Length: 124
Image (tube, rainbow, N blue to C red; front, side, top):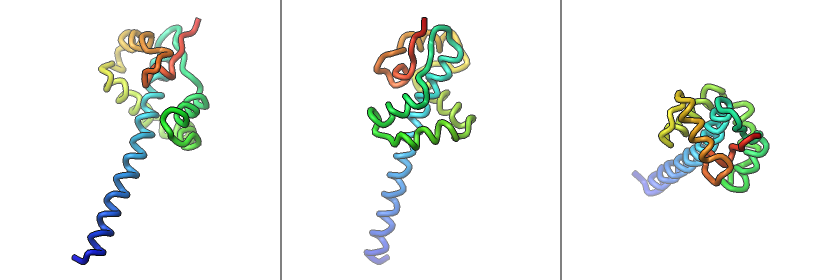
């Protein structure tokens, strides 16, 4: 194998990994937001920030592209977004099918700097 071919394969491999890592950042962010949305739907006195506010957080805190986040939230496949939210909850040892557990978790993290709680607000 020539040195040029080996270098090209190495660059393609590295470039592909970077694209996957970038998409994973969006998936993680969307999962956190969707987890907060799921919590707010099932729990009294908890609300979730609007998509525009979430996109602003994506840009300022997570250094993601605001328009891409909005596009994924508005036009993403709902089943996939739901799956990301459930995955984010499960990663925190919260069962998405257990409403009381989700609500306890949501009330605990709402309005904090927690990855999921930053999207939740208590309502009166």
